[in-house]
Amino acid sequence: MIKPAEKITINSRKFNGEIHRSWKADFIERRDSLLIFVGEFEKEIRHPKLGVIRRGTISYEYYWLDNWYNVFRFHEPDGEFRNFYCNLNMPPRFKDNVLDYVDLEIDVLVSKNFDVEILDREEFDENSKLFGYSEELINKTFKTLDELLKIIEIRAFPFS
Image 1 (cartoon, rainbow, N blue to C red):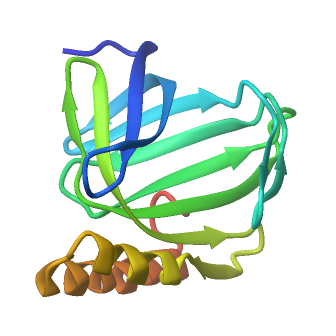
Image 2 (image 1 turned 30 degrees about the vertical axis):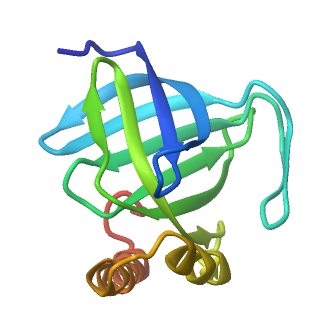
């Protein structure tokens, strides 16, 4: 069993299993199927939609072992809320202090004032052909996107 503040490795994988991104975060809480982590950006990142993410930016990360999305809540190094960033993904697996999930490319960016932008639909379409996503997987992804947008709209947890 993991203990609070224990370092965890988080791997974002492509559908074929390749690691796309990997980082460390601290485990802070488990609530049934929800795992909550906190991480800190060790270096500055330039993102086409998020702009500059400064070194020291804090990321609260919410992963449900039975949901098809995760949510990141970003705070500037001074603690000021920055934005939410959500990934559509297959439900993660958590074993031996490693959390692995398959990223399904579609992302949702939620600004400070709750403007919502859906990102990377083209990448989803390309990868669905490249990796041969089933019709069931494609349908589940878009159903999940609709559910996530409703959760954001009513500002339910973790958007509250």
